[in-house]
Length: 172
Image (cartoon, rainbow, N blue to C red; front, side):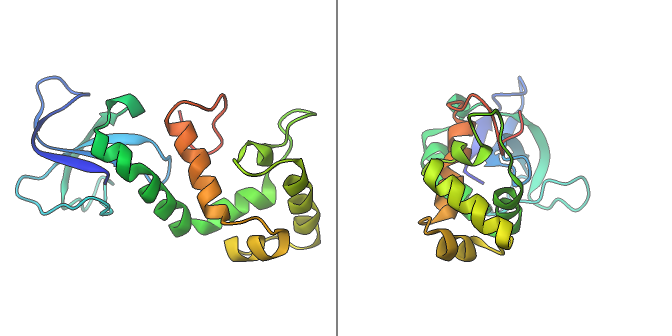
């Protein structure tokens, strides 16, 4: 959860009022607007379950939001929360590093991650051919890439903000 308004009005559903929550989905990494359950205790940074069965703090998912629609608080929280999501789903993002392929003859998918240029890309490919990376620490020690989780998070934020021509992680 990025931000909430106890008595707010929905941006995505006209006439809908109540506890309006702005959040980011962990799986698709899209910005969402949720309707919270009245009197439920919610905190910024908290993980909320939005699946069909067993919701306790979310009444319904109202829709998707664009970056420009979210509050300033949500924008401020975004990088920390995206980084937490990347670390929590480390296996998924390390798998991306292990499996990514060239997009065009000139550009490799790895190069689209901030901080990874041709040199790091070649080192990552050589190292993963010897043995697949097990986690971010393994990637960092074998390649010398500083804080890969932060770099992946930075790319996700660029995609959310609409600054990327092509999305690697955020579903449109």
